[in-house]
Image (cartoon, rainbow, N blue to C red; front, side, top):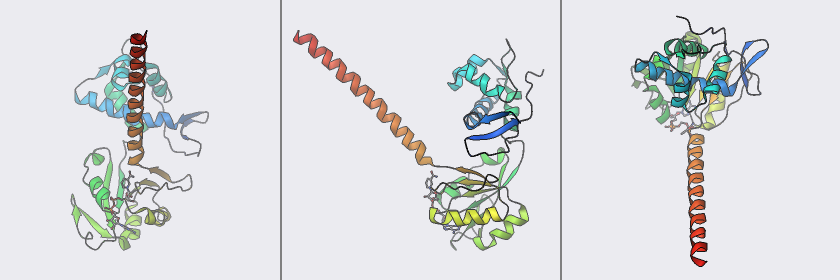
Length: 252
Ligand code: NAD
């Protein structure tokens, strides 16, 4: 049974002001919605692993701590919604969101800078399950060149241009020092790479044809620290209020 009427939704345009996708000439998808889609995809994947094939919008909203209306609004951006009284067909929604995210395709990826982070990412097998296939790795350190990670050889940076052009690399993962990343990224873009997943602690910017995700793990850690301190401050405030009330009570 088809529950959704999802239409076309390739998010292929970047326009500076936080709008990254478009479904039609008049309907643009906000970056906030697009950033929530991987989370929907992940949760739906977990439901499928538990053989849950159907879920009400209320249950999905409780599991994800997102309101049911938010979920409905997000999915309506793509012309899709659950059926009244039935809820969501988990498998269908999972695959459709996968398509929206471009996970029905395969991407050829290289890693540039095979140190701590580069090696950790190379060792993570789940990327391949989603179609992100690491086909090459590059470094300048002679001690790393020739080494293999999961069967993929680390090559000398000098070989990168030929490799990128020959294999038409889609995405480069950048895990080099920040002083090196701008030049490397520029070369890669000149050689035809249009997706950069940049970990190098500096925000890269290119023309709108180049898609960049700048990853800062420390931003997430700082958010954690903010929330931790906020909780402590609220607790201190409540403790203070309680002891003032007690003092006032006994001083009466
Ligand atoms: P690392 O020193 O272990 O690895 C860097 C690798 O880059 C080394 O193997 C080095 O030989 C290689 N390299 C240096 N210059 C190069 C060049 N021109 N071409 C190719 N390879 C080159 O560092 P790491 O711990 O893996 O961190 C990598 C980068 O990520 C650093 O810039 C670091 O500051 C940054 N970082 C980012 C986050 C984040 O949240 N995004 C977190 C930690 C570290």
